[in-house]
Length: 105
Image (cartoon, rainbow, N blue to C red):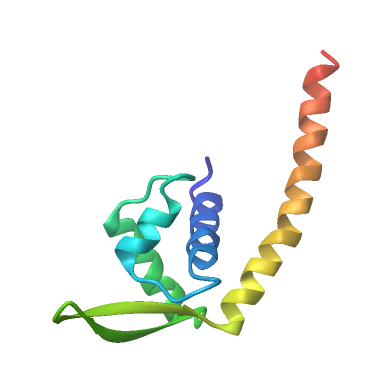
């Protein structure tokens, strides 16, 4: 898969994982596990990129005596998910065209 496409898909997946409630790294990985495998190092790279892009914010809260970073999606992050949904419609249209061509062979 094209690296840029995969990167964009992973970004949107992480945003979707925190869309409904704030979450932390380990929980995000756990929530995504039924759909895709993601290493901690890859996740934290994505989280830093999304924070720099203004698509999420970070706050710390104490949990069991230690600080845990929680990630919160911003309006910009929510817009990115909506843009992805629109982009995906176009990708599906192209996919159907490609598959149709293969079926006619």
